[in-house]
Image 1 (cartoon, helix red, strand yellow):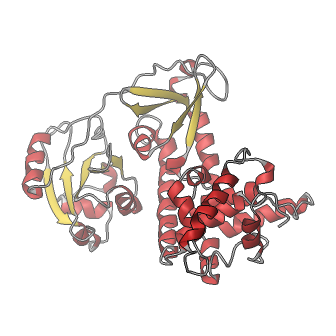
Image 2 (cartoon, helix red, strand yellow; image 1 turned 180 degrees about the vertical axis):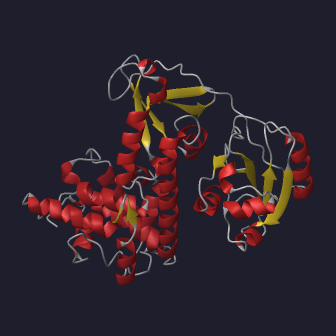
Image 3 (cartoon, rainbow, N blue to C red; image 1 turned 90 degrees about the vertical axis):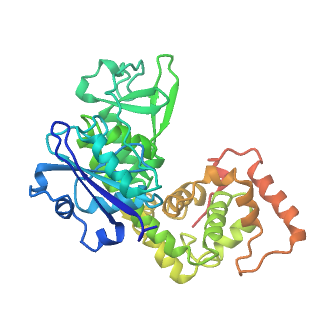
Length: 400
């Protein structure tokens, strides 16, 4: 797909008929050293980059995303457009509105030109969305006051789809998103909360669609675009590192077993035995991961740091309080490793197939005899359903 993917470059405006449409493959675009200046050359514009805004859109995207620097061109395309046959780059004057809120004067003409280039492949259209109004009756998490009572510039309205929306204070969103990112949570895995007028908590997952359609557009986008770009860079960095680790066919199952053992350390003797065999104060090593694998895992990004740095911080914190011999496998280590390896315990513990696979995994590379599977699975599910809460201290206390 990468070499044959078609990139369409559209120069357009909401107040003049000026337009230009050019098409090249992604491979040829990469050969030009992708930049906004290169895009202007493609559409035959003599203007400076500062005189234009640049937007990217494809079939997998619910809205066009503004490209604020040269690095974001390929980064955004790799995250959102890698499986799409056509990617469109819109170039507008700097004083123009975004493609998400207005059609260009030449829209019909450029659409026909794009269809001629694409042939049988359908051209993805940017959906023009009307401005949102604050109709929320929710309370601000921080002040406990109605969100609608905040100054307009302090409100952020999220489009939840199907005609639903929710309003939050900008202060809360920026603070919470920043805190979650520092903990290593992916920007598309962050959950924000609001309080309805009955005092009930409402939770919203910040999906990629919400980021694209709500957070990085609108009057508040200047505050959220840097977080979005940082999050994108972290996703690309982590995905590349995990892809390298997954070259070992056992890695994914071993990683899931590792997380499962950490969470059930206090209740499963075999999990304790496997973890203690690592000979590591952080339980990182064989029989789960090879020496080379351990070194790569330590370099995985977690928030602003690497996993190794976060582990050192945890050790220093425990040492200062005299509790370095009380590092908890379940509460201290499992969340940290889960964030680094991209494994969510709540999802894993409810995934019957994954539990069966890791129960049937031999860390020496061979599968256990099939006749033992039923007994092994019974032990796993008994451990999971023994009546303990997921964060029960008895689940994973260890002496490190």
